Amino acid sequence: MKQEHKLFKGKILGILSGGGDTPAINSSIEYIRNRASMLGYKVYGIRHGWKGLLGDGDIVDLSNQPYDGRYGGTALRSSRTNPFPTEKHPESRVPEILQNLKRYKIDVLVTIGGDDTNGAAKRLYETEGISVIGFPKTIDNDLRTRTMHSFEGKKIEAVLCPGFPSAVQGIAEFSARLRTTAESHSRIIVLEIMGRNAGWLTGGAFYGGAEMSLIPEFEMTQARKSFFFERVEEEYMRSSKKSLIIAVSEGVRWYNDETGKVEKVYASSEVDEYGHPRFGGISGIISSDITKKLGIEARSQITGYYARSGECRYFDRRLTAALADKVADLLIREDYGRMPVLNKIVKIGELEEFNTSSIDMGQIGNRQLQNDYYNINEFNFTPAYMDFLSYIMEPLHTIDFNYDFP
Image (cartoon, rainbow, N blue to C red; front, side, top):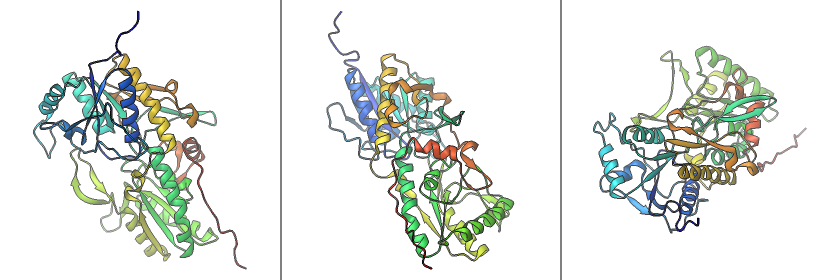
């Protein structure tokens, strides 16, 4: 029998984005909106994450609006608001969330975020029966997606989240550009890259030409610190142009000679509503220690928000489209409390719904960089990790000054 109306005509779907921005959030919003609209949903955008469902609400109608998903960041804005009781906000704001979902007649909520944003959504689904679908987002690439990577006959559980492909491409390009200034001054440059608990993004600098790297997964004890200095000196002296780029994650734990402890470096002692402090400055400490210990001029360079910024790259566009197709599948089957993920690492042409699946939002968690991807004794990334990135990366435009004066 002919269907007179679209399947979900008269229903409303809300989209919000929370946590740190990425280049792929607008792309995710655009594709989710388009898929939901085809199913008959009216689509609302909730501004500033969970904060947009507090008070009187901050809601916009996206149904018939132009939306440019190529533009990075999130036009819906973001925040680190936690609706559940925290040390900063002991009172529960869940009743406000429920009141506004009812006020705006939102039937289904799609939350674009990491473990914090989607964790709150999952909790609302379990305790309040809210119909939610999570959507992955992080440049750190540490949200467990159970995406398998095949390398030389071995299957490795990797991670692939929207936002990471664009960010890692940018870090690779940044590292490649830095080469000329390192060579000009015969310097060691310590390049600091976002990554609170995982070193996935730091590997982009290695892809771009960095010779050594440090990641949060392996703490730098006093013994490892001494061994690291030995390796740095060897690499520097072996370099024909007497230069070196060392990529370090912001969350690296570094042995402090004064306190005798392995410590993280914080830019601020203040924490957000999910209890996360702000990192920053480890590159300055490491470069200073290199100069003191080895007598080699070293400088620090913090990439900061560079990785989060800019346009959504083509791989991310295809990835968000494929995952939005899976969202449509979940909506049709009314299968809530789940998050779409990519089944396996594939080339860009295979980023289609048939290579996706979904996982229970309660099983998301975090996934640090696999041991298969990092050589702990060489302080660098393995061929397996380079193969992983080869599926994602666009060709790098690099140049080299090949002439060495006699």
